[in-house]
Image (tube, rainbow, N blue to C red; front, top):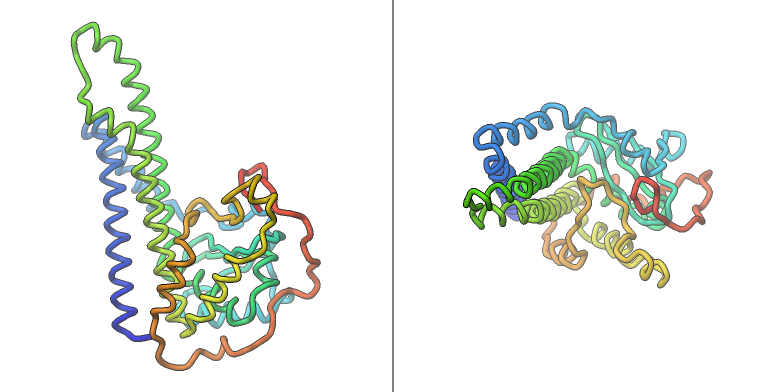
Length: 317
């Protein structure tokens, strides 16, 4: 890949991510100020500081339990472990991510954890339907998330968004409680204050979703940097997008075909990702780990025949 193209994309995405996080923090601080003045701002900033200190301490396996995931040992799929290890070393990760298997026909893969304890989860559908180079591209995409600390960034954004919603609800409840007293005493609440309390959570969520899309584009860029093969990632995305869906599933649960953790719940339109991949110029040979032509699915795993459905956890898989 041309260095200038990669560097420009990296800088652009980093600046966009920084701006979005700052806007979300400003919204949270504004709501905190409306409720409790400078004390509210300190409480809001304190919540972000607590997450920065302890947000990545939750073991990935706790999150993966909601998907009924089980760990893929080396003997289950030596090739998949070797492929992941080579890409992780190529990316300079301090530790190779653990691998997990989700018994679901939905085609998806996602990452949880941090650089020091990352885990990549693959569904049955994605392991059965992708070729070697396509799987390598997906792994490189997920490892790029780990390499760029996207999980931590999106976790921070999720905390800011949720806390903004909580504070806004507190402010609205306080406003409703004191409104009769204000009417009796002739006081009033400035209209901009009401607007901020009502729309701050929505604006924060929209910024969070925009941040997620930015990080996904950045992970695509990182994946191509690792594999020197934008075509493989494009084919993988097409397979996932075009995976057969029954009419009944679309009518009953539209838009619920892809399970994803709340931290990485929004992706850009596939068409836009494919356009960016098509525009990437690649220089140099593909790494050796992309050259094989075998499949990576564990032979001793039975095919999943159960249809995806809603779970008690609220997830669709």
